[in-house]
View 1 (cartoon, rainbow, N blue to C red):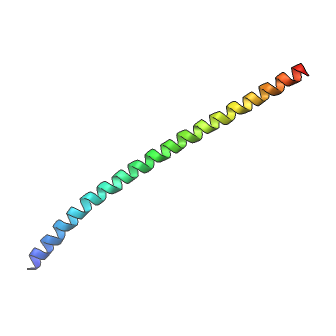
View 2: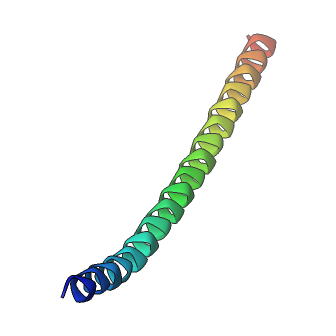
View 3: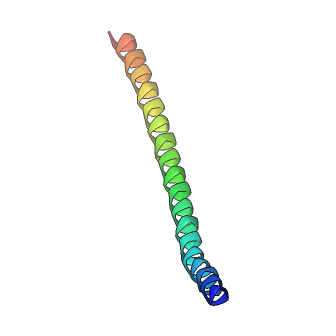
Length: 67
């Protein structure tokens, strides 16, 4: 009887671990993609801020020329 119990526990443990590991893998994949997306958005915002700064300098220069 102990052998049947041990066999059942081993099989059930395996059957539970397999989808559990799959869920962990997919979660890690989604998290890494979310981080990349966030990094890309932050980089885009940084570029946008730099472009605005350059435009402000240009407007300032034009204003000083025409003042």
